Length: 412
Image (tube, rainbow, N blue to C red; front, side, top):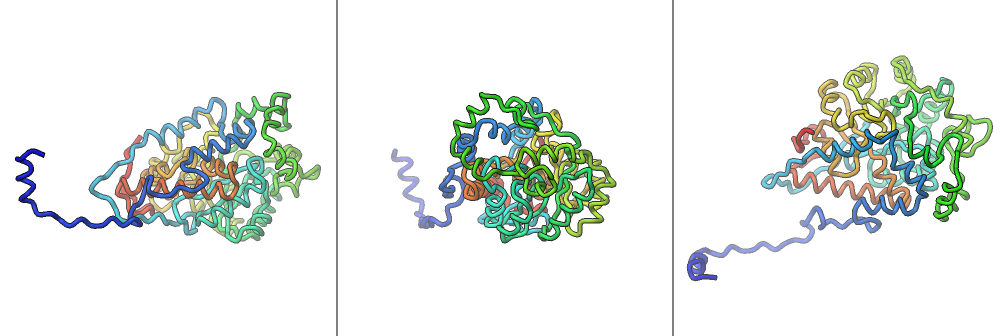
């Protein structure tokens, strides 16, 4: 160093250097990731290796040309987090309340149909991982394991999602079973008046009835571990099998159920559900401000802003782009949960910044489920929590509860 700088530094008193305490190092690479996956991409890659290509496409794909699916992801990517360098917080609170339940972070596991195609006893594995991590779990009407099986195997309450049938007696029976299982909330699905055409599934022969061609069968035979589990476990639709008179296997029950779904849900249907169901009522599949106001007026305790993960109306708006307008329309008293396109903890913080109370995740946890059952779902949740904590740290966000999240991101 030259003499001018040496003489200047010599006049400056040395300050004591505080020792670095290892436990205080938090965030990013300093947090140990789950042993199963260093980052979420590993879970997705593991799922792709394990599943037959047709089943992975069933998980990964959207409707038609997948415009909405891509838009969900692109609009989240376009949102910019507001980095703060002089406003770091020493500790972050990820805990919140969702659907009236305490949650270790503002995330819940979305209802997934036909989970048994991804992993044997899928719903039990997912529900156990959610209970252990402390986040809500929602069981689908189209689950492989029944309400009763999950209740018997999981020592924690779970929500139940209802697809309505034309026969109100079946609807009433499903509600009664959910009530007897002490489900704390009912999630009414309203965005499946018709099922979106899913080109990947059509190409792969995944129709009702199945139309598998020789090339499809060859690809299935290339995944012997998955095939063995399928043959040994023979998944079905556990909640609907009791009503199907012709059999209990997946293909037969699916064929029985398909023409019996009600499709469009009317205001009168919602009023009947509100009158019948004694606990919290959540309406899932809202993408319009006027629909959100009507759902709240008819008694919904919470609304899930969703386009079904891009698997219904292709060309619809992304949920991230519609959230601010819906929040403005319904005010601060209605619990809003965002679904569709959420893949990371960074997405979760963006959703909170736009006005959501929390997020439902689907594909993000099913990658882990397909890769390793309960252990894989736990890894997915741990990675999302680590990403959320990192994002909160670098945006100066101390608390994940809705009223405490500052403007951590800018508009699309």
